[in-house]
Image (cartoon, rainbow, N blue to C red):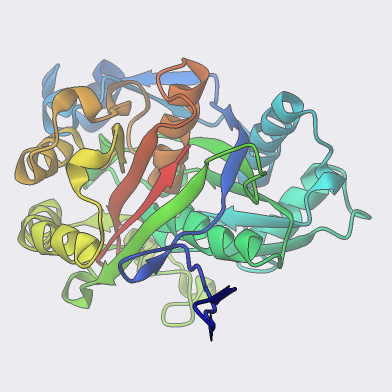
Length: 350
């Protein structure tokens, strides 16, 4: 462009503060919830607690447990639901991310087993896993936004599928009362010209002083499966120091949020909806109050599903889309904590 005899070159960069806006659109979503319902009263009986005690500790009235389903089967069902809604075939996607903590086996990646469970062994769709425990779906959304925006992949499937029930420890009453099983999936693509959907903020921080506050010590190279005995079996189950987790989260979440929005044009009140990780009833409420998020914006599905590890956030997202609660154009913050201890978030316009 020439103005007043001078050459002016205009470069437009879609950027908000330090975060480059990425063109990402959720095409559709799906879920799979096991049929077996385990009520809080049943958990009380299993743990030998007074009636009502487990719900008081966790905020969970009921959760679902698998009765033979595998991680990959649940993931496949969730993906099939998302594909059916979108009218797409599996081959219309060129990458599949399994985002979860309870992998089906140590090798190969669970995404490859999910592809096989779908009967798509010859599809050539790339498969890989992401594990940041409860934040796996959020991390995968952040990565997928960059991959589809850059053109590396045209369309991707992200699925979180968790079987928490297999690793519960009856000696850990608080943790035992929290968890449930299930799966949820989304299909994402680069935002088409007629849409305003995009990802416009993302941030993650890890505070490894809390690395062992939530853990399964056995099963890796430090304590290999061959070392499992009746005497060591407790180390192959889930352990959580709930008080230490909550204390650390409350110490860091305010600063995390301030750093996430620093040098951007956004603030927490800009979001129509906040979908937190469904950690526990008391934990979610403490964070909500700490960040002064209005109750009506805070999506809570904990009571009927429990903590589903990485599947909690995408299931809450899926159910909110299905019910019409979340509509196109709404700004949604997916935010949570995970073992590590990490805090992470991705902001999208749906």
